[in-house]
Image 1 (tube, rainbow, N blue to C red):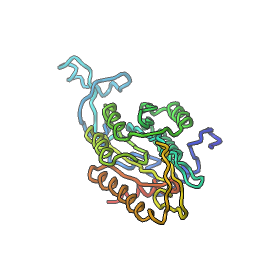
Image 2: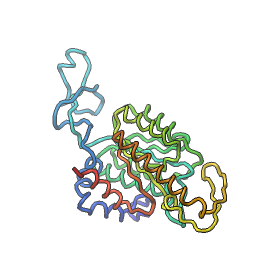
Image 3: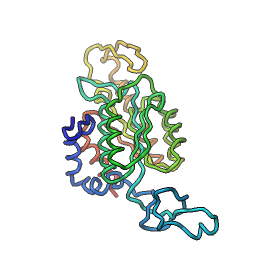
Image 4: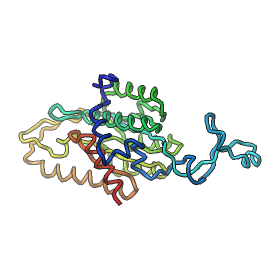
Length: 299
């Protein structure tokens, strides 16, 4: 709990570690996500790119009066390279995200901390960030804004989130891809427990709509290593189904299938220019994020 804000999912010590690491200093100070990507977004600083219709609040200095004369409508000139961007965080709140082993953070808590860290850094840079939570349905859909008040409201909403039951990752992502009309950066935080081929097709849908995509694939460490030694009763957190398992008979097959599950997503994302980050709830945020940025900045 942060004594300054009272928000359970904003971890000041983690933020301080991220900001002080030399490898991420530029990304944090000048814009965390801007440091990760050569911006495909539009701003007012470099070359002319295209027009868009004028909306209230746009700087009138960028009006194209020739277009006004030809069309009798107001258009803004857009330019390549923009520091500020629109980011939408998609947080999976389905039942499987409520799993934790031996009292660790649940995957949903870890994802909520990660959402808070990313949102804080984006808002600090005056990037617009929004939050969408989902299970089988879209439960919360906050559009991207850059104000401190909006960030505070996002934190309040995060505080109220609890794991639901079943999930439908692929279908929900398809619906969201159709909903987000303006080009933005999509940050998906999920364990991706759905049919992989269907999820990949849904992620392709975002790319088809020209969105940038980062996938944070979140596990509990026990889900990866299967550390159980004695027969154990496992319960599906989404369906409630129970199964008695003897680890001596299933561990090798389980680990092999889990590795294939992860590698399948990693490979499919790489083929579609989607950034893929696999992590588990034991990995500190600063280490995970700095490792990711270092990889992104490698020639």
